[in-house]
Image (cartoon, rainbow, N blue to C red; front, side, top):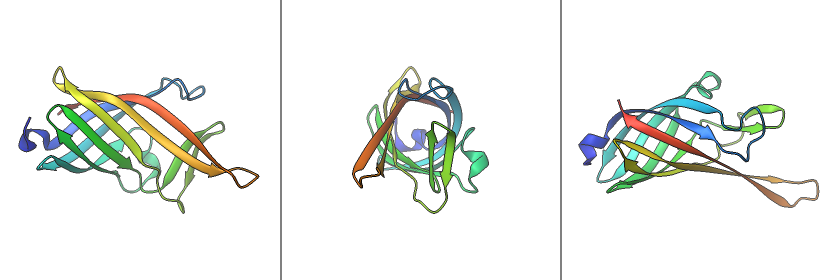
Length: 140
């Protein structure tokens, strides 16, 4: 696919992996992404059925595509994370980076996503939590 074919609106969904607790584990969330691709570099915006109600702006997409392989980072306007008590939104903290990677198969991109959140524990030690899941998207 060339840059022109890749640019435009894409629709898809992401799913939370087994590391997430109930009721998030396995949950699937629809999204729409508008991207522009120039010389394999991706820039764009993403809205999804879970986060859009909490943010006034869409998430930002930046990445690259090379042949059948795509890789991009999604950043929401500020921090939010699924925790045991439910979603936690902290407008004063920056968004974590959600790393997406995948390949073009059967007229769609599909792959995995990963997010790493680092926090300080009561002893002042950094503790990292990793969440993973799957995703797909197809040209609208």
